[in-house]
Length: 272
Ligand code: ARG
Image 1 (cartoon, rainbow, N blue to C red):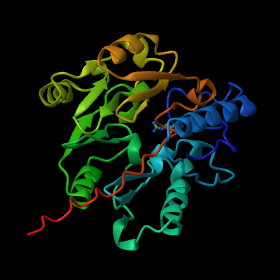
Image 2 (image 1 turned 135 degrees about the horizontal axis):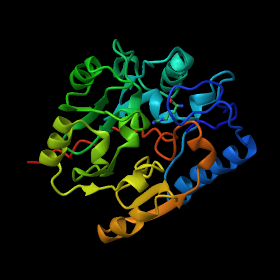
Image 3 (image 1 turned 180 degrees about the horizontal axis):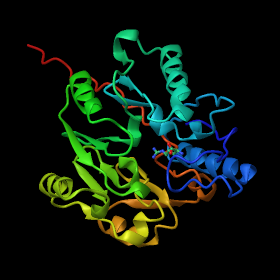
């Protein structure tokens, strides 16, 4: 996570961003600290990335890289306003012991976990607004996992993580907002995830899908009131968060959270 020390909305690269609307910075910081503290209270380790002046969107740390099995695919941003963030993320990984061989500086535009979602069987990959479809092949080759491209069609849902959320990455369990996807991609989602939780428009419209699940707790925007009961019915524990100030930049819980998926431990060798 990266604190919103320099957060502001001075440019607009998605329909949520209105530079004429003031941002309450102390409130943004307090809301972000709440999220960080909630992760810690749930027993998760939170690593921090130093915020850089002049990079107001850096608080949306999910976009800076994708980490699967301890390997890091760096980001390459679609908009010049954010391009320097990618370097800060790569430096963090180098400083924190990720060997160069496991870190890839990408060839094609990809906005990290904004557009890559990791399930048990696949990596789901958004295209249409930010990440290039060419980045999907690059991710597949680098991670050695099948990458499923999904076409986003509504500018309010410009990143995959605004329209789809992985609930249990050990079981291919997701929730998503069908209208954010093209007809073909909707059919793909239906085929791969016949039991997915389909999210209604009002909950999607408050970025209710921009959530993080640890397989049990689902941290999500508290305004997504329609999701709490369905999540409980599926056995999850919803945890409502207020990140209202960060919504002004077009992000919420998931955008502020990059997941560091470690290498799976090798099963112990069978002794003879
Ligand atoms: N203002 C940022 C942008 O438009 C918000 C990014 C939100 N992050 C995310 N993972 N969806 O790029």
